[in-house]
Image 1: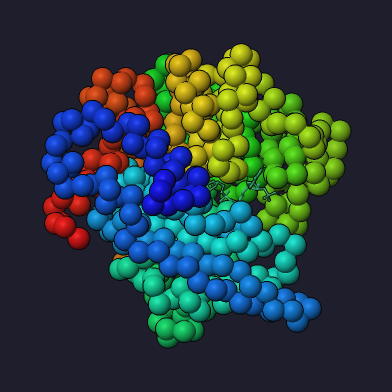
Image 2: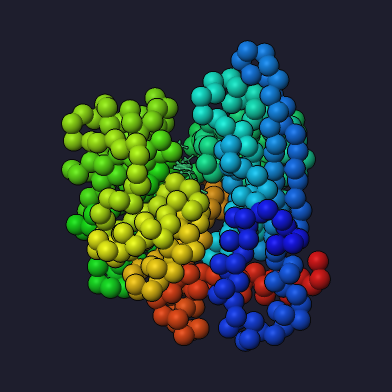
Amino acid sequence: VRRNPGETEFHQAADEVFDSLGPVLKKHPEFVQASILERICEPERQIIFRVPWVDDSGKVRINRGFRVEFNSALGPYKGGLRFHPSVYLGIVKFLGFEQIFKNALTGMPIGGGKGGSDFDPRGRSDGEVMRFCQSFMLELYRHIGEYTDVPAGDIGVGTREIGYMFGQYKRITNRYESGVLTGKGTGWGGSLVRPEATGFGAVLFAKEMLATRGLSFEGQRVVVSGSGNVALHAIAKAQSMGANVITCSDSSGYVVEEQGIDVELLRDIKENQRLRVSDYAEQRGSGAVFVQDGSIWDVDATVALPCATQNELDDVAAKRLLSRGLIAVAEGANMPSTPEAIELFQDAKILFGPGKAANAGGVATSALEMQQNASRDAWTFEHTERRLEEIMANIHERCATTADEYGLPGNYVAGANIAGFVQVANAMLALGVV
Ligand code: NDP
């Protein structure tokens, strides 16, 4: 804390991992001798830069850009870029830290990193977003590369923004280096299934957890928060497995629709019309109710899929959900449940899939995009989706068996933290003091 003052979210993320590691350090004194914990908390490199751009009225705007290259023991730094006004170093470091272990869990050769800016794309014209992305890349380009650091999307960064950044990278470097960014459009080097992968993956992880108790998504009452990339595809996948998904949300409120969200209309509103969930309720008509004040977690559910942002589900929400029949939570977002909420879920012995395992399908499919770029190939939707299914089943298996091995059966938090950490720590030991 003294070394990284004010980085609240980073402290929270690091505490959560360290809480799981007592038995690991006992079993592996060599990790202590090599100061792996101290090293793993210190990013290999952090870049903070000015991003000047000109808005539509001609005024010069200044934002702050970040890239934290956290750990490259397993491969090039890999992790998304977030454009949101709340972004500061503490958020980027929490996301980058989580990413190290998540990426290890995928079994793919990728290290951990994260970046972004406090730029707010909401209400900005296409031209403004493009000029911002170009200015952002004008600094970032010198730090990234297929073998160095491969950014992707996150909150506020989708295919449009990746396109503008990729175009600028290509222009500056005079290289068509497809593997430098993932989340590209399918017409220009992107992978099929990448847009769906995080949401689909979270549902696939939840499906594996439910199966351990002889349950499935059939007939479950599911509450999904968010209405962005992750939420949209989580809703679609859960519905395809027979669940009734009754909510979606954004930062202005949530929608409840007892007969089930119309995911095609929601997608059109978010991705084409670029409107809000309140507009969804309006266009959908009488069955959908928009609630401006209050918490989405007041809606009864058997399965909760938080897919919006960090710390969106607290102890009050957890208590309420538990008292109304909740049986499973899978985190589509990064760190959406507070530590207190996680403790309540674990004490109640419900199924709880932490983000670094449950939402790893996105980055895993980004690694599949890198594979396709490297071999100048493009796989079919079916083939790529099959790979994603295998990867999610493997991550679930790894978390479950690691938890068993350490005498904590059913504890996916411990399983994910330990399995991810041990793999990275072993690689760091093998690579020497670097
Ligand atoms: P998007 O920008 O596509 O969507 C984010 C959604 O969350 C929007 O509906 C947004 O509403 C809502 N949201 C953001 N902040 C808040 C807030 N403070 N309160 C309520 N709602 C909020 O982002 P993604 O779907 O890509 O990302 C969602 C989460 O999933 C993030 O935690 C991200 O780190 C994580 N994730 C994403 C991956 C990916 O592949 N995209 C991979 C792994 C994890 P509004 O428009 O009002 O801001």
